[in-house]
Structures are given as C-alpha cells and as structure tokens.
Length: 519
Ligand SMILES: Cc1cc2nc3c(=O)[nH]c(=O)nc-3n(C[C@H](O)[C@H](O)[C@H](O)COP(=O)(O)OP(=O)(O)OC[C@H]3O[C@@H](n4cnc5c(N)ncnc54)[C@H](O)[C@@H]3O)c2cc1C
Figure 1: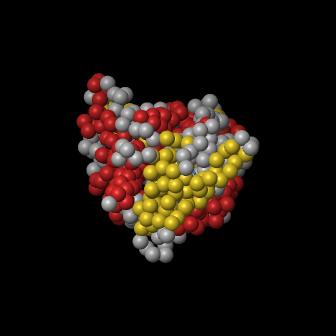
Figure 2 (figure 1 turned 180 degrees about the vertical axis):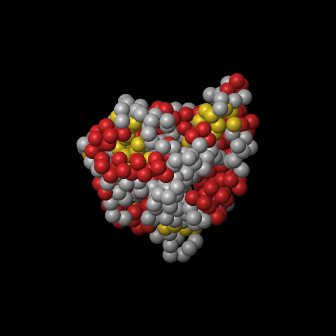
Figure 3 (figure 1 turned 90 degrees about the vertical axis):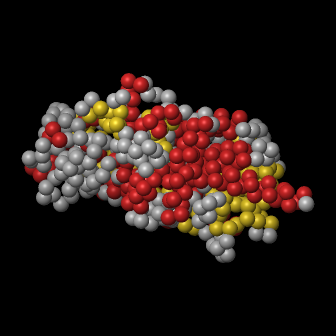
C-alpha cells in the first residue's frame, strides 16, 4: 500500500468535494508545490459524503442561456420547452437568510453567493460534467418543463460522477491522494501549524507517523456519523438517527482542532441537515449502491402521519428544496422515530421513480384506504385514527380546484380549519389505489463547525481571536453558514467556493514563506 510522504507543502485532510476543490485550487495556484491529500477511509469508501450526493449545486445564474453551455444532457428541442427563472445573488442571499432565520454569517453568505457561479464554471473547466437536473428539479406541466426551487444543476451520475471527475482532475494536477490515513493530531511550532500526526497501516498493524506541511487544510466533514457527539450536541434521540452517507465523518478533526490549536467554534452546533429516509435503511452508514435513493422527499405531494395516525407537519409549507432538510428532525421527534407518507393515485404518479420504485423501497399498496390502513397497522400505525385523519383532511380541502394543482409552483391549494395545515398542493386523498411508505429520520451533515476568515478560510483561534497560522478549514467543518434549515444544493457549492479560496490562500502563504526564507 502506498505510504504518504513525511513532508509536503500543503496537506489536505479529507478527500470529499471540499478537500479535492482545495487541493486542485492549491495545485493550480502554485504548480510547483507538492500537494498531498489524506483520507481516513479506505479507497472503497472514497469521496466521503460527497459520493452519496445527488450532485446538486446551487448557483446564481441568469437563466437557461447561462446554464446551457455548462451541461451535456439537453438537446435544442428540449431546451425550447424549458422554463428556468434566473436565480440572482439577491435570490440566493434571501433564501439563505430565510432558511437560517437571518442567522447565516453575512460575510460567509456573501462569499458563498458571489463566488457560486464562478465556482461552477471553474469545476466545469476542470472536467466536472454538469447536467440539468430534469428528474429532481423539474416537473412537466402543460407541455413545458418547469424548473423550480432555485436549483437546476447537478453533476452527471450525481456524487459518484462528481468524485470520479474530481479525483481525475486532482491527479492531472499532480496531487497525491492517500487513503487509510487518518489524521490523529495537528503538529504545531510556536503556535503555527506545521503538519499532522497520522496513523498508517503496516504489515503488522498500524503505527503513528508525522507529515510535515507548510499549510494544512481541514476538510474532514462534520460529526454526523458519531452517535455520541450527535446525542451530545444535537440532543436526545439523535444517537438513533440513520446515517445517510459515509461512516467516517465522526468529527475527529473538529475535536482535534479544538484540542490542539484552540480553534474557535462557530455556527449551529445543535443543528443539522436531516431528511425523511427509508425506515428499512441501515443505521450506521449509507449504502454505496442505493445511495441517495433512500431519501423519501415526496411528502409535499401527499400527507405524512405518525404512528398515532396524526399529521404533524405542514407538508406543503414551501417548495421541497426549502423544507426537506428539516423534515428528518420532525420525523425523529415522533413516537418510535418513524412516520408514514401517504398518497392516492392523483399524485402518486408524480413521485420520483428513483426514490419510490419497488426495488428501493417497501411500497405499501391498498385498493381502498381501509386496506392501506390495515396493512400499515401491521407496521405500527394506529389505523382507526389514521382513517379519521384522512377523512378530516379530505373535508378540509373541499372546494379546492383540482385543476389548479401544480407541483412546480406554490399553488396555494391549502387545507382549512385543521390544527396542522397543509399550505400548498392539498388535494383529497380519495382516489384508489393508495400508496404508503414508512420513513424515519436520516442525518446528512452537521451545521456546527470552526470559525474562519471568510476571505481565506484561515481558522480563528478561540484564545487570541486571530488566525491560527498555517491552518484552513472548508466544507462541512466550516461553521456559521447554515442554521436550522438549508437551501438544497448549497453544501457542495460551499465546499467548492471555500475550498478554492483555501487552496489559493494556503498556496500563496506557503510561497510567501519560501520567498522570505530565501532572502
Ligand atoms: C445522501 C446525501 C445526499 C446529499 N446530496 C447533496 C446534494 O445533492 N447537494 C449538496 O450540495 N449537498 C448534498 N449533500 C451534502 C454534501 O454531502 C456535503 O455538503 C458535502 O459533500 C460535504 O463535503 P466535504 O468535503 O465537506 O465532506 P465529505 O465529502 O464527507 O469528505 C470528508 C472526508 O473526510 C474524511 N475524514 C474524516 N475524518 C478524517 C480524519 N481524521 N483524517 C482524514 N480524513 C478524515 C472522510 O473519510 C471523508 O472522506 C448530501 C449528503 C448526503 C449524505
């Protein structure tokens, strides 16, 4: 097994999107520098959480004409049928402010939004293949393909394709990547970070060694795969959340950076991104085959009830991209940490094939609502109360003009008089056959992280409030952007935007030190 070097110019810890963006940017800023990426996971788990993504990138743009040159899956005929509204800096900024209750750090938010478009262009120029996200982000309505929710781009083959393309780009740029190499400590000299202690595999087991570096970039993910830290920071019950992605993001480098250099924490340490997730999925890690398909994001098209048969969330309070990241928390808050999503045949045909086809989820089907209720009872549902809930729901939407129903916009078809409203897309659930699936809460990533200088991502010290020389932080580890909720597709954009800045800043700092030493 190849061993990492004992010294390098820049050491990147973590090989997901943020780490690979940082490594590529560093290599392009100073092609003579030696850039090394290490990752704790074996190669079979390459790509961290990034591998599991849908590859959705949120970016500002001026409309379809701006996006078409970036994508490889749209014919001119198809393009003539597409409606995509421009997504401006003010749209992206106001989405971040709205989602986070105005708590997003304004300086970080500004960088993320302002750099988003150039970050995508930069990835595309480096061989990352983009596509329009027809299946996830558009509905065909009145013979027009209407994109909604400010998110139109994804990478070809989702996260799998993204990781493949990014690894190829860094390899072309001369960056070396080593797996099975967890960082276990940061090395310092008089307050400056000078490398990392790592554990490496040997024929007789593993041993500790050091990698000296002119700068270290932390890109090792959050603590979503660590049940103990989840319970500690997110609260009771979170230890039982299902992990959607890599099992290797256990918060090591957050703890290590705080321990070794007093890195200052920032952001929402009790907050995270969590979705409605297949109740039959594994607990401790995502599945690299099924991947993101365990997500169950079709609740705006129907209703969701807990085991007591009660609705507990407004399934239609906003477009899915603005609600899905907090629905997991709501499901985990229910008895048994599970819920049932339910549709009738009016809307079940609009569910996304990749999330709801029989091969990836246990579909519970009934020719009548009573039959469906009976089948769900065997899986823990109070069927009597469920039937009452459906009756009350149907009565509350009487008079809604069914022909106005439109999943591509907030159509205003709402319930009236219910304790828990449904604000959009509310139709009676009365047209057989009926469908239900059982869901739980799946955790995606944690929001709490380290404080950084937004211009460079240099890590800030808790004790001095100054930058820790030689240390940068990007991706899920960077705190202060997301609070409570999250506009879909912002995590990958953040990783690339700040990864680019970190790589550039680290390379320039290392070059500068080398110049000074030569004087
Ligand atoms: C199922 C799923 C779907 C998602 N879909 C999207 C989407 O479509 N769009 C979007 O924007 N976001 C999405 N996200 C969120 C997205 O994954 C993250 O925001 C982003 O990929 C994080 O990138 P990262 O580089 O910070 O972390 P990661 O990609 O997780 O990389 C971190 C790496 O650090 C390594 N590591 C951890 N500890 C150590 C250590 N001590 N030493 C060395 N290495 C270490 C890990 O092994 C891992 O490989 C999704 C997440 C999941 C789980």
